[in-house]
Image (cartoon, rainbow, N blue to C red; front, side, top):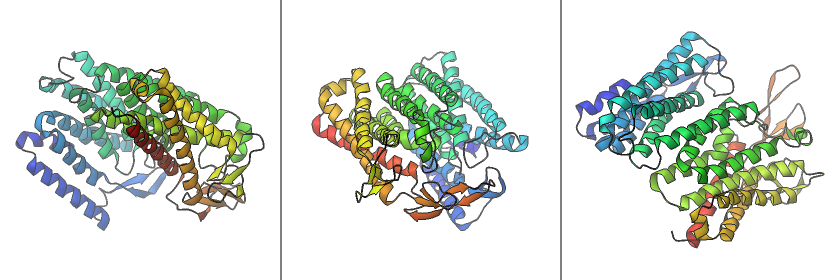
Length: 475
């Protein structure tokens, strides 16, 4: 299908009929998915379970992403659409075929769908070849940021894009890679060629730095495999596009919070069975903690609105405040916590519990995020005022951590562990014989886990900071 979509612009001068056709294919795919038709197209295997499948939304997302790109890129930059579609059509298919045929070793801790080393290698090699050829063939069509770039620089960009889409393919299941593979290619090429908000040199340096951070984080056990892959994607965007003024606040959160999570491990060990996840972050935690910051960076690269930078600081302050509240609150000697909704004393580590040490730490952590931007001498902060900026970001993080506690107390899923006779955030427990025991839902909703609550926390921090600064400084 990707090969067909590559040639569509050759036969149509207008995007009208391709847009109509792609919408029809998306609707047909959605209807067939809901009706249980064409199950071979709408299913993919679950990792380590040979006779079960998970739904795949690929047949719906493939034409949908073509529709969006045709709408934006057809007039003047259709080569970006063609390149991204060809990588998806060939690279993703080869990854699946080679991974299945080779029957290789699965990459641990990635997604619900099995991802093999052989499949990822096939994705990388095929993507690198396609991207290299495409960038050289379409070179005469470059009129913006890519115009005049030497061949070796274009090939280096192809290498970086191949690494990015390989990470995307490995991370996503349910057919979501059909959306994010072409979207990631189109986004990078668009901001370099069209908006010129990034340079090839900057992206290459950012990608190299992000790769080093990810590998070192695996070594230090800050991240597992999926967390490292997600951090590579996030870091390449932030480091490569935003430069130091966007990078330093992110690194401040990442390293300080990761180190703090490793401190006092013996004291915090008693909470390991209460919290949903341990101190080694996975992709879900990277998305929950850094996903909104990621979106803020992407929005800024498209629109250039300086207020978005403060929303970015606000979301980082929020997740730092939440992390510090949890870590300091559970590390503190003889800690006492109260439920935020009733102020009733609860065991430390309870979802929705707040404490004086934890709340104080959340405010300090938020201030450090803004301080890292102050150190970088960001002109927008000087325009708003350093003190005002510190107060806005500090209170945005503090309020967001309280929002996190509120959702944790009201809607986050909490379960009863029948083996250890304790309340926990975990959906299952492991019995002494190694069998998995499903925990009983006590309160909240199954779909509201800690990652979702952290995401809501991050959103609230960005919204508070954005609205506050809009009232303080008309840029």
